[in-house]
Length: 68
View 1 (tube, rainbow, N blue to C red):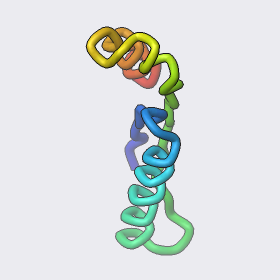
View 2 (tube, rainbow, N blue to C red; view 1 turned 135 degrees about the vertical axis):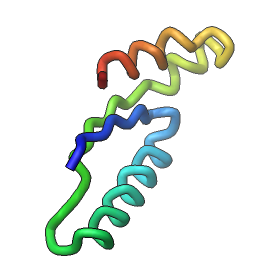
View 3 (tube, helix red, strand yellow; view 1 turned 30 degrees about the horizontal axis):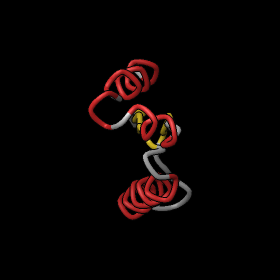
């Protein structure tokens, strides 16, 4: 199984949903105790709001590069 990277934290509740749905899908497909190999980089949404969306690309890019 490949390891996936997930950039979360835009809302911790949506990150929770993504993680849940990904793992439910893996478990349905493989069964048993199987779950996704996953690395989550959770951003602080407060930082994004302070910079505003149009200026927050660097925060999101840093998260992606860190996961990579």
